[in-house]
Length: 342
Image (cartoon, rainbow, N blue to C red):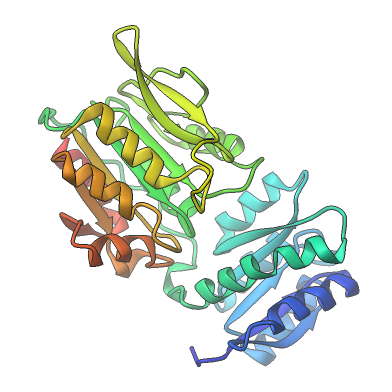
């Protein structure tokens, strides 16, 4: 990748192509190399221009966004950031991520310029992160390899996982690898907008031996279950009726993300003390670093995903550079590493 990130903008709306191009042009590190009106034209333009990143609408004539992403990844993997309408596109967005898209940004339903420009910073940051994604990781991942059950060590009472960019693909490989009789509960935070986490949890539940649910207020935190924090609320824990239950809250408000990995990790350390195994995986930024410090301070353990398997080596890097990682593990070995420790 050169210093300037060359982007192909794909959208069937001339107005959106213009506005997205203007958003990207606000960064001195991004250049719009070209535009395309649908997936078929995008395949031609991508072959001609060889962009570093492609932004792509989903609802397009001739060849839609999911079809384009599948065809492009089969031909020549290029990082794709989906720009989707906010309502009603959940199935398509998840299908696009399955097909190899790196990330997505919600396009407001009302195409007011002021609202569109609000998403400009988010779009630029995600395009810059996508440009760093190793292309070899964009193709369809291998099927998850199931890890056999083994006697529990009794060292940990919970596994908490934080993930962001590349997370839908990473969790889809990790969680189905864990056995049905996993001896401790799993709790996960993934940075996703409202409207996607419940659907994603259902889809993960369909392919995983564990029971995967979007956490609700008061959900019991028990072995054999994997809880996914709902978008827009922090997932924390409370001791209640002799057990531990999920607690959801919009507070604190001063976190860059809601749900926050730091909030989950902090609460796990408070409730479970030294008996917490924290996992920080692929993603932008540093969410999880402060929470990892809380877990380590209470005597818990932190594993980070190794750079070689991360779509974006941001969150794990922040933990490693802070000296908080006990071991760096590639995604394909993460389930085994978890089972070895619990």
